[in-house]
Length: 104
Image (tube, rainbow, N blue to C red; front, side, top):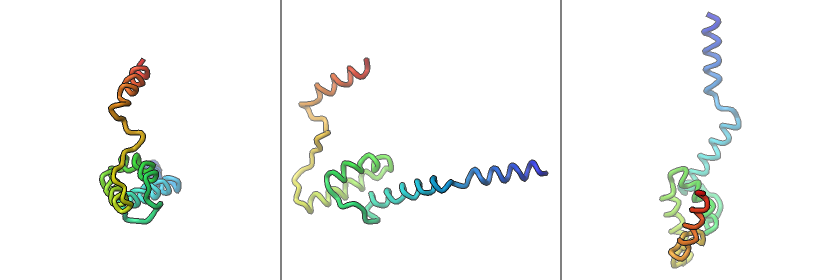
């Protein structure tokens, strides 16, 4: 009987998140809400958009995040957005060489 009680206690404590785990979860949920536009956060800018884009992809909200960026871009009268890290036709050859050297 004591063994069963011990198993129940251990099982119950394994499911309780630690304070650090709760903090991480709360931060991720807050970031998700910010990316969706549900709460305020850093002011939108090209740098802010690019910085948070990998997180938006990871949280599967990149479409919403990009829509928010496009609304901001139009309000700032930016005609187009072309990130400097984008691979264009002029850099494809360099990228292929880099990939080949990385594979070796």
